Length: 117
Length: 110
Image (cartoon, rainbow over all chains, first blue to last red; front, side):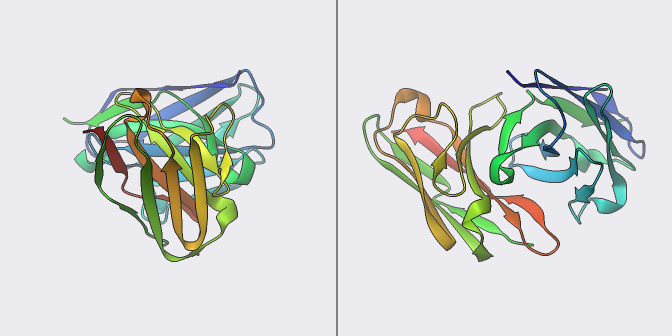
């Protein structure tokens, strides 16, 4: 059974960089697309970007200038970095696997990141 | 960017009734890349339907998806108590290609 687990600081100061890691267990990173999605409290879902296991990345144009997604295949981990954060970046951050027709079939449980001084 | 608009925003129904949720795209979407998710409070979204009409693994057959072009529908034939949740449609495509989600439909118990 594939499992995804997000980890990282729950509190980040304004203007700093948010860094999260998604650890994949029970399956390989290979041949899949790995997305980061976020959800502000009480609001809907926003896609941040994805990484194909080979290293190709596609980002949401609205966040592209601040986002980096990378992979460590030896650890089965996908990382997210979001720079210059503001309170508007406060959200639950999810990682998810894109499989058949790029549908997101496995999700982590999510991690709440609050941006505050 | 392709914008997905879901309607209604809130749907109030009783267990046993039929639910019909709509997702309209601002431009034509490939059916291959249209999916539906269910989200309950405090939980991650769960994939229900992919490729517009294919049920994901383990999803009961009371859930069905249909549509093409700019209009897609999620139907729940007979509501069970555990079906009351928020539902999102999602597409992948456009230029540049990206995922977008609808704003969600909240299905609540009447």
